Length: 233
Image (cartoon, rainbow, N blue to C red):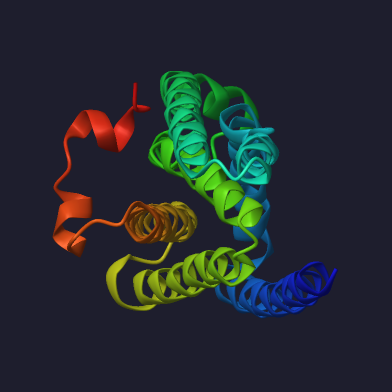
């Protein structure tokens, strides 16, 4: 009960801070690109979020429950097999969602964006879908292990990276214009998702290393590809 209460408090505080940061960022973006830019970006985002639902819906909850069941049996190797299955499944679902969004982006832009922007931003955003779904599975793993601080750290890293990338692109690299503004927001989202997922995967491998008793950290990251990505036989 004590661990549950502490994790609940941490999640509440983390969510509150992330909401505050996100709201402040939205105010900055609104002042920077105007109401029209925000409107167009929201159209792009609505299509993208539908793809995110296809890529990762239920994966977080499923990985949390499956890993929790193995941990309840005190089966460490079983939990490792379970999360490997979840990661493979989530990556495949993310890849399928990527293909659907990438190849339909021009058609969606033609009928939904009213000529304001092309389908290029959607094609870019599609790249992040396998990373989003994979990250969702890894987050479920750490939630099952009650390591909520790590889950919150992934979310904070993603948010901070997105803010810095978008601000840098808007002010120093991209030329003024509606599509350039949307492109900056899209690139910020993509890079933050990719880097956050890479960090979460690194932490996952480190956690496996600690549980498996490798003689050195190098052993953890130089094991065979079969051991790294597929469940042990």
